[in-house]
Image 1: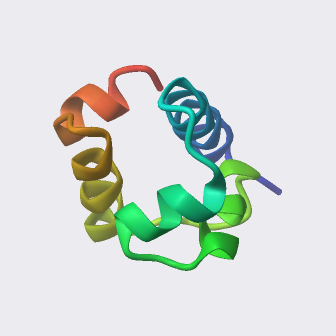
Image 2: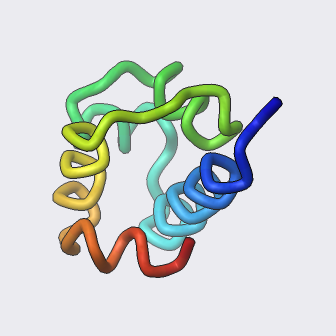
Length: 71
């Protein structure tokens, strides 16, 4: 069963990535993870770690709290 938190987080990541007009591959390169990992996050298939949340926030140029406030 997928957590609503993971689903919402994935939606937020996808929305912000699309706002920056980045492909999953380009975004993954910015974050420093594999493209399939980004897809798994966006589809709520991965329980992401705090360290990777930090990397994602930095790639978007925002704080962790700003990234999570939409959840």
